[in-house]
Length: 265
Length: 298
Image (cartoon, rainbow over all chains, first blue to last red; front, side, top):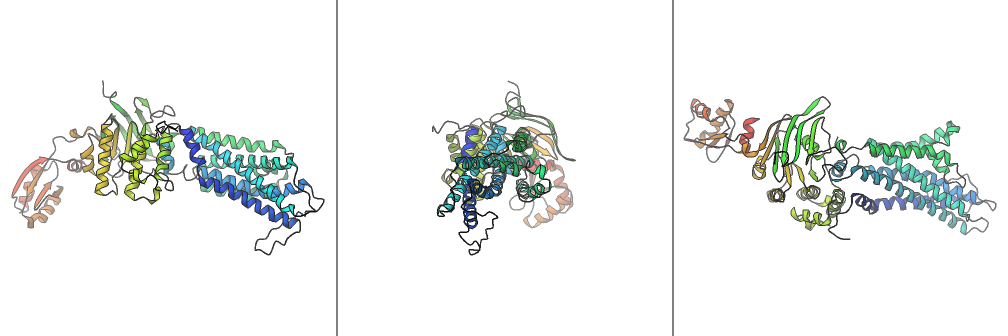
């Protein structure tokens, strides 16, 4: 690269996040934890090992037998992904905004950036891309873990239907992208990333499961349930549309309402 | 060429309120191209608010700022070419100096060569591979200054850049400000240290409780103000100071037994001292320094 050529702000923003090591850590940690939990769960479900001896208690209602199908194995892979991918997406979304959209760093960006809105819009797209990558990598690693867990058991079928694997990977990517975008946009709008981080995790882990159990008809339309359904082999995509609208809408509001003159508070 | 043509930035009736609290009232001035403008005033006089408004990151409640004739908030890219190191602004402590400056340069559309030149100018180029949080306060100030220089191709806004710096570093910062002016950039320097302002500024803005009480050449600020230097015996200096203070006259000590009595007080100082029974050994007038003028006003 010609050293004297002025770099473009958008390219600068992309390069900045692509060289951020903490994002790689989050992506890899998600994949490793999801794969490890699923591996242990499959071992337990297949009755091949006791789960209580190592200090980590793995419980599963699923019992894998010789008659278990691809769908059963894919379901086991999804059970950890649907819990961990949303949390990782929220962490990534707030990470992209946190410490920046509420601090003196935003002042620095506000003064220096020639195209402030473009910088934030690019950042939103990067959030979606990185959270999608995290979901996809975690899904791939988790499916590989299922394969590894059943490999030594001649009685169990193999998770070899590409449709199950592809839908799980694609669904996890979509779930990561949508929830990551929502987390980023809410953090940018409120400039209170810690509140958004805690609030969204409490919602995903506590409130939505309660709502889903209480109002069964509405449950499948809620963000975590609706996006988790995208990982199934034949998802009802319509259920995810409200979440898509919220993600795109709140991101658009966050970008379009950003005014340089409101950066300092 | 009229005044506005020569101005890189103009403020027209700028006012700002924080809720019920009034921070700035009807502030109008022009920052001339290639000059260093001092911005002085007591704590809470509105200096930092004015700098943030000039940097474009805080919208004024009233009035308008123009950058090179164009309203600052007219469009996304308008008014850029401004760099700032203002109150509340921060860089990224966990990044290296190089990464911080490259990021700011990239956002501002400056080149890596510009970044390297700015680092060299503030003499921080040896620390480019060092993480910002490992630097001393003085070196972190230099990095903040370099970031402001990289982005500020037209105008550099500096809020108390000398705070906490040792004399050598202060000297470096003063030299940098003068060099920037020599390159044709405009600098606005907010400082409580009036010696620094006196040393590097050609223009001056004085804020008093949010109102601009002076805007123009520094030499024109109370241009005729003088102070009287009265010399008394060393053992009577303290008694003389008390007498002058009781009469409402500010004074500082200058040399052995010398007292400098505040601006505008020349005529009455001798009478007060003689009334207190302090013998005046000698007295003469001299032109007031900026600090003496400033204290004489506020």
